[in-house]
Image (cartoon, rainbow over all chains, first blue to last red; front, side, top):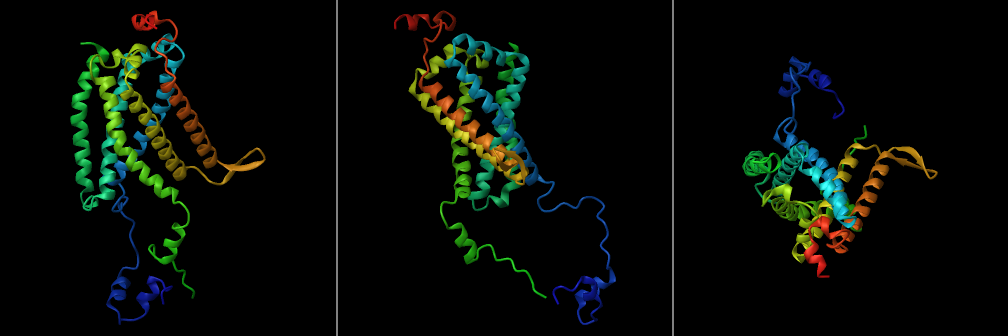
Length: 154
Length: 161
């Protein structure tokens, strides 16, 4: 019984109203746009994507950052020469990107923890994503002008 | 006529198979969350001290590092930062490798067939171990009077030694 297709079920007789209904429209039309699921395309998916991308970026920065800091064990000149390149305008903008990535990864990480451990976390995951973005904006409003002043002078 | 049956996720068998030995994946999952919370505090503090306060990034040089590591507080802070962040990052990268890299034997390395996944995880493990050892040695063998104190601006402190 279970391996019968919908078509055979529909033809099996007028006894069941459900199969009768299916018999009227045996074809399933192609969706006009990718239909999506509960997950796909919404904040749940995009927060996950951003979490991965920012995580990978931060990881590779961390590798470089441990190596550049290790130069303090080589000589003051070597360390200062490398760290001075961090004070140039282009690297200054890179640091801005790094702080954006770290800020998002940190706040969204806390959101993930709340979804995992807080009883109503899964219920409010969308609201918490909005809160993450708002807190990030507040954080950056404090950081960005000050950092730009440090890098570009003023 | 036979129907394939998938056991319910919370059945006795599922519970038994996960109860054998240490569940490393579970502890990895817990580690990401515990270290994550601590890292939020450690990294935001690190960013504030190094990029926001005072002259920001412009203040960072050899003498700045020497000044921080003269205080045991920052030695502990930076050691925790190094270990928690690097292991957190490496475990996250391992998750990504598990998701995207093929586990099919692909290369022959030392007469063994290895997958791209194994190569990536080997590289991750090696770089993590090397950087943890390097970073820890740098913090605990740091010498503020290394090289020419004239260039680090620490001649007054180092002249006394």
